[in-house]
Amino acid sequence: MGCLISTKGRYALRIMIDLAGNGQGSYVPLKEMAERQDISLKYLESIMPNLIKSGLVSASQGRGGGYALSRPAEEYSIGEILKAAEGDLIPVACLADGYVCPRADSCRTLPVWKKLDGIIGDYLDRVPLSELLTEEETI
Image 1 (cartoon, rainbow, N blue to C red):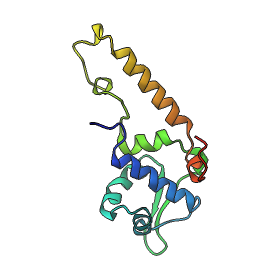
Image 2: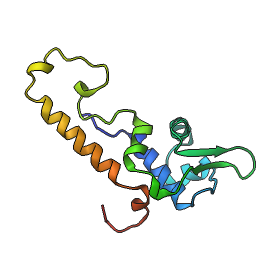
Image 3: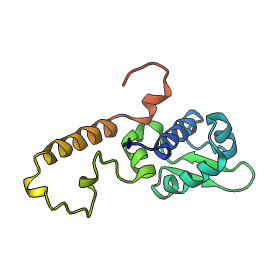
Image 4: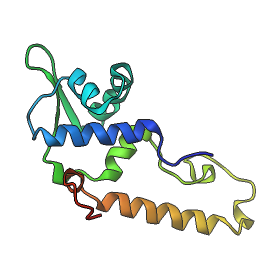
């Protein structure tokens, strides 16, 4: 069974929560996050370039270096974090950019998939990262 959100997306979200818990501008070594989150360092090293390239985190090298949020936690949406890690968050392959379905003109299910895609995207874009910092279920 395929999943909309892969391990990469889930781990990226955990890393962003970890960084948010340390406050904006506080650089955290990747090794510390890997230990706290129980995620392999090597796997985190494959996730961080996407988060940096998307401008979600900044990196600092040397003593006291590591990774930090680029802006306050309340200014991030879960949707933008997952998109940075995953790329597309489409529920079905036929909605992928560049995909041309020969049945699109007569497909009776396409409107359902488009609406589902919109609902998922709207929801994830409305949930701020800061909301995941509390233990209470508010979402």
